Image (tube, rainbow, N blue to C red; front, side):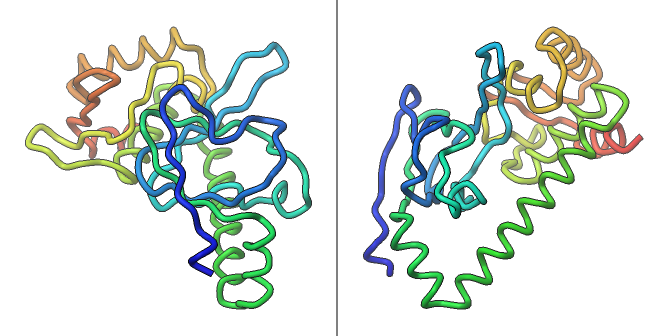
Length: 205
């Protein structure tokens, strides 16, 4: 079924799919980072998660029951995505029980992610939630450097605020304090975690 896979390339100002579009493909991030966003009732977009190389998306209940996309997939720069028609993908699962088990594992991981997100949002303080987010991103996509761990993903203050359930102003204030305390350094384009252990301690305190 590998011949059913096609590669598509997108730029920063394009969309892989938009909220409300029909679910036609299953996707795998090959290169780059994809941001999943959801529109609120007042028309604002809220960042839900970041997808990195190897991440599979559009493989949830909405895709299987024929519904439309519940959110928007937007590249954060140039990305390369492998995709397969939903009909071909479902046919592959019918023919290949091992692949079906992998999808079950994936859905289980998605459930675990949702539970972890709920735990994150349940933390009392916004600085704990933001510290936990930075730790997660460092573990998932961090690049070790002499000064610490550089995040491979560009996170704006708005992205951070959306993902931890706070305001942009609060996220800016907390990040300023993190810099003052030498926990992080740099800018959104090049954010470095200077003291990962202290961030972990703050997140779990």
